[in-house]
Length: 234
Image (cartoon, rainbow, N blue to C red; front, side, top):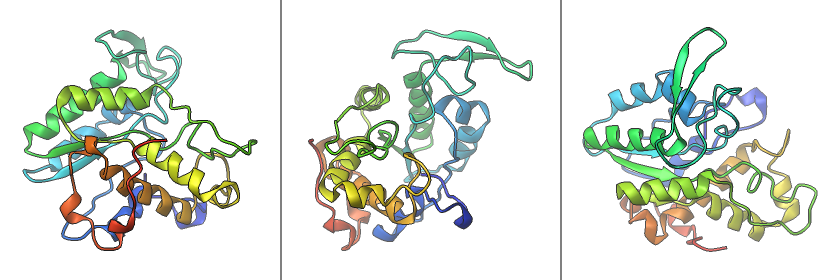
């Protein structure tokens, strides 16, 4: 999702979505390597919330960097969807209370709504499948990690639009096939090149057409973007 340097050979889908929308300004505040926890701790979400105003939309998509044990990872959230917390001491001596992933996302949703903005919860399009779903296999397996249902559940709980970006990306890669899909991953099985980022953005448009997206952003999708077919099932 995040902007990448041209020399890296990779790109985030947030840099490609704007070509398919009209009448709306895109501001990409995604930062590589961040989780819901670290994006919050570093004040990056607070900075986004400060910019929001009535009528804005904010896409919230985390999960790729959020796994692991919070006692050993400064990005990992507490396992589960409840209200459990753990207290950890970071390498710089900072004492931090760590929450579950839905708690972080829920707070982001609440602060966006408080500013009059519409939060859009998007499931991660990466991590295992669908990174390069054809890595070392001919026939991929649909296997969403826990943050995908976490995203759906917190969106439902809060009554906000949900885009199953994971499902839509997986479905698109299956359609494109092994050779084409693998061509989008120049360095590893995670990071797409510019063409791959464009496909992930296209998949987001497909996800917008599913019922759980509640029609959000539909009036801004231009004639080219309208060509993205709905991808709402495997």
